[in-house]
Image (cartoon, rainbow, N blue to C red):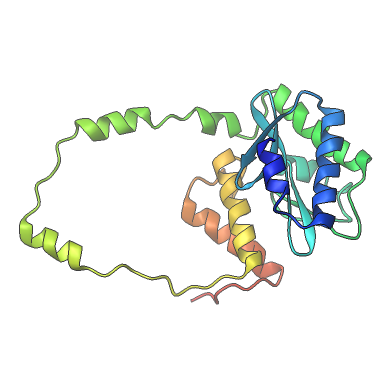
Length: 217
């Protein structure tokens, strides 16, 4: 039994059947797809690169083409669904058709085959090896016992912020896109590389859609 099958066993029957249908349709389009679990959800890969993620939520099925560009290009085709920068939210009572899913998958495959991954490959190729080596080579600064004791005694900070499920989901999507290199700033249009900025974008998305988000200070 594969990783995705193990995941599907934890999903309630009605939603499981829809996820299985999506996976089966994807295999019709990409017979040699590889299976994995990425970002805690079932994901299919083509040539080692993710092209489709899918999971179940309380009121919808989430479909993730691992590219914000796909959603932008197909926005008119996907108008019946809820959309964010990296997700397609399909209502439980209106399953996505094979024709639309096919367009989503083929659009993503086109980008992969042309290596136009919106920065994904570049992000994956950035190896932290040199930084780690430099960190190992750098001499460690000696700290006094008194300073160390104070540091150990300091209580751990607890976050007072509380987010709703919708906000958490949007933040996760923004973080996912940032790691893929496809998250862009709405003002400058530049790729977002800051974790703090990605979180802010996710929270802004949730706030627009009525999610539970702490008020701005």
